[in-house]
Image (cartoon, rainbow, N blue to C red; front, top):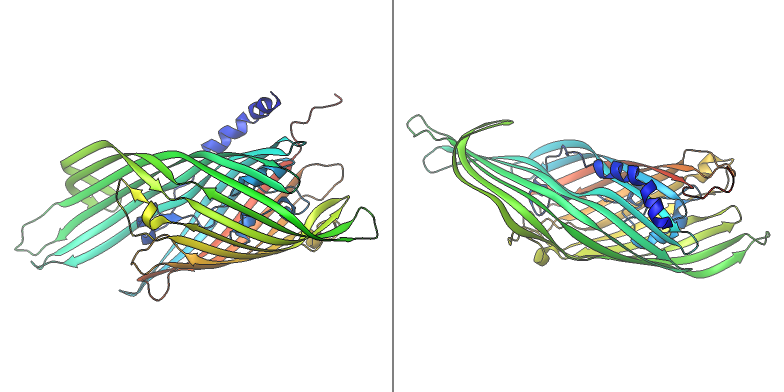
Length: 460
């Protein structure tokens, strides 16, 4: 009954979260033509983005002593929630795409929501918590022009256009014990994939005039997903201080998640017509064929992630925090054989990623020295993208730095904490063996507000 009352009090926030749909991305990437588009760089909390995407073994003590951030990539972390937390993030990304043949360069910039999430403890004594939110997973947005000279001497122009992407609305629950946690996320993955091919001729004066042909396929899809996660820690060494309640602990944390393979249901409209097309305007003159509400399946592969982290933990009556952390993580998904779109395969390959990270906080409890309470982060990842545009594989690597800035001074009588998290990521997709290479620069910032909610008043 108490849990139901908590949810009812959060209805306005739930409505706000569900109404904040991802904005249309202003990118122009030929990579997003394949599969379900470009995966959103590090689609996770900004704290993890500063660590190169490290999430599997990210524990609550890594947040410092100022509130908490939601690790929604591993639901086992929800059991350690001790305050209600609102967490949101935004991404500003710049892409530079280089083509080998012909030699050319294209730039694009876009600013989009990264996630909105809410977490709360259901039962602090039993260490049960939950979280829910909304985030984009992939983005489709491209406009590619192609010109070919055909046998008659005429020139054939193709304009390939695509829009859409995959989004996720999730809810999850977690349970923690002393040194072990387990949890699950579920919810609904949904999105669209709209592709068009506008074909036209530039013909000689003695040639027959042709109208343009317009081929459009618009697919809406969605389905339930399920993810499980575990997390735990092992105490390696403990050193006592002069004050009996203070000590330093060295611990090893571990974590793993498994997102099960998924089959989404789709509805597809297919239009073939002739007409005229100019930038931003289509005029259909004659419909050759129109097929609506075609039912089909989109199959996504399972994804597995595992990680470990080595912590130096400072413990006292005033709080617990990690002074430094070193982490390692690996994930893998078999896209090549386990993905299909209406029964069709695509130019994809199995994807994997290795991540290493480092975090340092001089002294989260030294409230008189602000810069000692800031949490500093750095990470590096390298692996292979699931898109395989030219059958040569697409290597991807990036380096990131980040920091968590408390924006309210600690006061012992105040249980509200706000943290501004920032992350800067610089990376590259592709190498000299690929027809295209992409450099990306991403700046992310997130705001985390934690407060003591739903406590029954003892006095009015």
